[in-house]
Image (cartoon, rainbow, N blue to C red):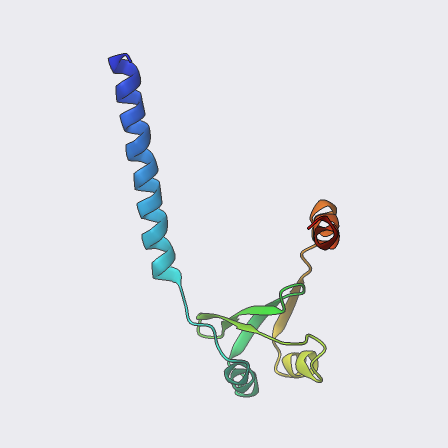
Amino acid sequence: MSTTLKTLSLWLVVIVIAIVVWNVFSAGATREEPLTFTEFMRMVEENRVASVTISVPSNQIEGETKDGQTFTTVVLDLTFDGLVGELREAGVEIEVDAQDQSPYMAALISWAPMLI
């Protein structure tokens, strides 16, 4: 193996390691504890929530408080009585993120039990 190829391989390994280390430390700094649904509803009732994004397939709610803090929580059923009404009543900006699943993934999931 030529020295140029060895040097190039070494730099490639160094760059990959640097990227991995950066991702590990930057992800750890932004990680946050999810709120319980009760804490979320309490914050809505206290008028502390500025905006939310509701992800339809995962039933996850991501949001931001009026003082700029971000949070996440999970709702068991998005048809929870009064959730949207309470959010609107509190003046919360609501956004819905309907992540469509790939038709290939849907077919794979539906056919997987038969293929196994």
